[in-house]
Image 1 (cartoon, rainbow, N blue to C red):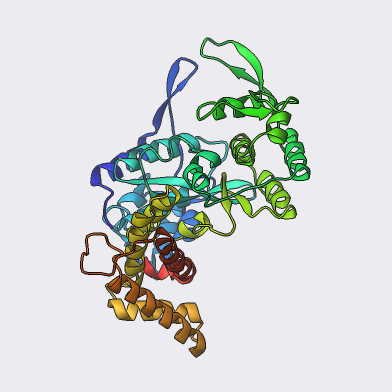
Image 2 (image 1 turned 180 degrees about the vertical axis):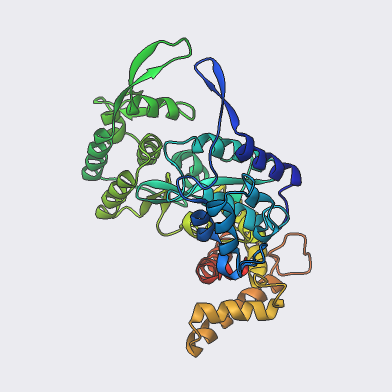
Length: 432
């Protein structure tokens, strides 16, 4: 896919070549950041490209590695940021997937210079990419540091966080989900949150400094959606700013909200691990995953799996299906997921036609074992037949109607199950 414009690529190139301006205590200053971070340039490129298999532009050397070493280490006569215009690296005229993978590589924890201005450059690059429908985001962690992936940018979605109780309001009303947290579990959750309830100095717009706490900020965040309430000693439901009362005497859905907002201010792997240990210990079928409480029964495809997909069209459809499902728009979610299934089957095109591409996916999923080849081929064929026979796409009027939303839910979860396994076996490097 080629949605990233020449203008965006030029502007990102200019960021690294010329630096960006930032405000620093009422003074504007220009700062720079090396795209290869704390590594040597050739060391960075070796992480993303097989330089020994790429051609040399210097006839004295047999491959790109020798060429680049000569002109960036020995002589240092390549122009700064030369790689963005070197056709061998396909950053100027290649696919979006190659370009986005390169940008993610710049901000990898192994690469980036933590003391440099990488966050400012990441923010500016995202601003530019969003014009063309993409964004970089923290997809997973290594040693408590964010590893960035890319995804389709959905305006408005990442700008405001919708807490657990509000995301599931309709499902709760229709009694599709129930949740109970016993007193012992509430106590464990409260003790954990209190452990992470830090006190720190803050500064308002006038420059006035004051002490605040994580819990105070969490309650302020919650008030954007509803007034935090709890039952008092008289069994009256009253407003509260007490973390203890809120955790012990409010709705279990609100307790999940508190966990999510605490994670926002304590963005660490340790916090997530400890929350999930408490939930599992108490038989609560939910988990904290990348800042969101999700059901362990009805979980969607993991972010850490989706971010590995290097084909933008497939990634976009899976993101859309997940978004519509979370919003309760099950009919559109099923349609988008079936579109993703059909696109998945063409993953290795144009080098392979649709049938051969699907067969390669099936072989890879099966480890070339006949029993599993037969199993997955049957599932591919049956899901294809469902898409052909039932009115998955609402504009197809000659198909069998799906009149019960619970049937849509069945179709969604069956298709999701196959896709979520298949994408783990895709050859991402071979695709690029």
